[in-house]
Image (cartoon, rainbow, N blue to C red):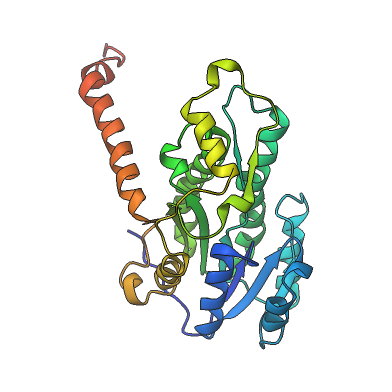
Length: 294
């Protein structure tokens, strides 16, 4: 496993979607830890007090950033040119669309992919040349259990998260030789008011879906009645410690996957069983479709 050496100095973190939820929680931990913070959000005017608090800290600033903007990478270059050397990029901004895959429109699916897949990759591609030059960097993607095993109606969201997770597995191998690491944070249900970032597919459900689990999930999310079992501040403390190599992260700086939330245990076991079952049933077939040796 690759080794990563953290510089003996405060780190500069760029966090997208820093105005609420996980982003705000992690941003406050970064400031409390004595690090520099580049906090971003689409609409800084919505959180004037927090914006002012960040801007008042030496070495920190709030930047307007929409991850859907195809020119968002230029923001990274501008920040670097101003003297802020980004050590940690945290891709946190996002929302979720709910609806059966059959009924979600291509425009809805593309919008979800733009925010959760292309948006983070734009920022990653923009920051990597700078990190490579310095031989250090941490790329953190806030993912979801939906990327492992999503519930009915979460195909758009789960598919986008799984896409970024898959790309990041490859990315980790590509950038490790440069002293750059990735961390995928697979999150369960937390007290982030995620319901406020929920969008329902516009198409009405066909009668066959009435009463289905997909419709039930849509109703639960639309009414914001999902009961979370996780504390966002405890979760972000774990993320912070794994990035800086303190507390629960000490000695685990090279780890690439951080599952958080009791519901993650069940989901990870479900995926493990799914793969194991396939080998049990088709293992012989799998190993007997090779070319015959001449």
